[in-house]
Every structure is written in C-alpha cells, then in structure tokens.
Picture 1 (cartoon, helix red, strand yellow):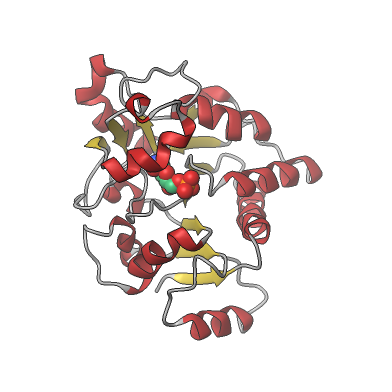
Picture 2 (tube, rainbow, N blue to C red):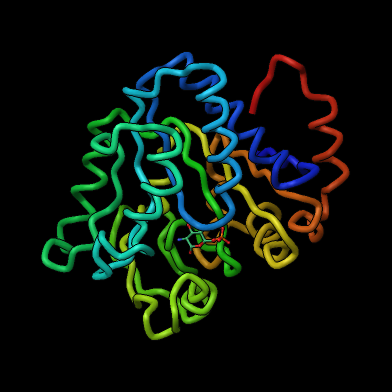
Length: 261
Ligand code: GLP
C-alpha cells in the first residue's frame, strides 16, 4: 500500500524527504532524482541543499529529470519549468546543469519530444526517486484527469482549473500556457520510489481520492496505489479527509527504526 506519513509541518515533511535523498546520494553518487516544480517540494529542496552542504556530499554525478514543462513558453521565461528547476534545485544543490533535464516544450520538436525524453530517462537507468506534488484535481505532473494510467511523456491540454491555480505565477490568466509536455503516468510509475508531498486544506479532497479512492484515470494520483514503493507525506490539513488516519499514524509510530521511507 501507499505509506502515508502525517508530518507535523511542511518543514518536517521536507526534512523526511531530504534525509532520504541525502542517504541515497551518499550510497549512489550518480543517483537519478525525479524533480517537480510547484510550491509543495520547495521546502524539501531547501532541506536537501542543507544536507548536501553539512554532509559535504559529492553531487557532481547526480542526475535529474523534471516532470513537465509548458509548451511554447520558452526556456528563458522565468516561469518556464526549465528556469524554475534551475532556480529551485540545480543552483541551490550545486548540480551540474548538463545532468539536469526538463522536457522540451519547444513547438518545433514537440511531436518527438515525449518519446525522446522517455528514452533519455531509460538510458540514464531510470529514476531512483520521483518527488511529486498534487493538483487540486488530483493531477500529477501535468497529467490531468482522464490521463491514461500507462501514458508516456506527451503533450497535454491543461484544465482551466489548473491554469487558474497556476496563474499566480503569471501576470494574467491569458499568459498561462494552454498546453504542457509532461511525463506520463506510466513514466512516473517506472521510478523506483515515489514521494508525494501535499500541504494545506485545499489538497485534502485530492489526497483522500488518491490514497483511499478507487484507481481511476479521473484521479491521476490514484495511480500511486499501483506502485510498490510510494510514500505520501502530508500535513494534518491535507490529511484531514482521510478515513484511515489512525492506522497511518499507528503504522508510522511502530515503524522499525532501520526502515527509512
Ligand atoms: C503544477 C505542476 C505539478 C504540481 C502542481 C501543484 O500543476 N505541474 O507538478 O504538483 O502544480 O502545485 P503546488 O505544489 O504549487 O500546489
């Protein structure tokens, strides 16, 4: 099943992720990290950067693959996911930018960009740990409701709700692109470990549907239930609509000390 960890705070959740990634990098210096944009992973990246500095971790061989990118926005736009990943992950962690990949949202190559990206992930040996946020409609990456659960990286039309949610990063709704290129759900499920982070009450319905609802393309995050190693780290507010809350807390409280996430 999906392991659900109810963290005391977003900060505590970020530290759980960071500790696990620091130990992954220490044991596998060329680890492949699956990266995500959005506000949910930001604290986790900050904690990981602190671990890298405090433990003098060698990250020169670490590779990264981001989930998604807006189509047609251009890598130089400050809200492109290319620029966002660079600002929030590559620079603070000190990764080699040549080893950090973001799907190519350039219109001229969009027809082949998805298959090329999946091939690049495979050539790198697959993703060791994919960090995920969740949209209020249950999307992961930019896999909107209705996305095939075995999809590869491809272009998707964004829901108006998603564009509304993301307009805070732009000056107006009109500026938010209508299309994105995103790792498919099938691509995401091939990562060896999935860690989904969600905070705040607005994510509570999506978290309940993803963790305890039926597996359905209409809640893309419910695909985590198909993964042998998925960890959902939430705060109390995002966990507030889960029915099995007591059990999740009990399981974490009685977890053997040697078992990480
Ligand atoms: C965007 C991203 C998703 C992210 C979602 C939620 O749609 N493509 O990867 O999970 O936003 O973002 P936030 O964490 O800011 O709520």
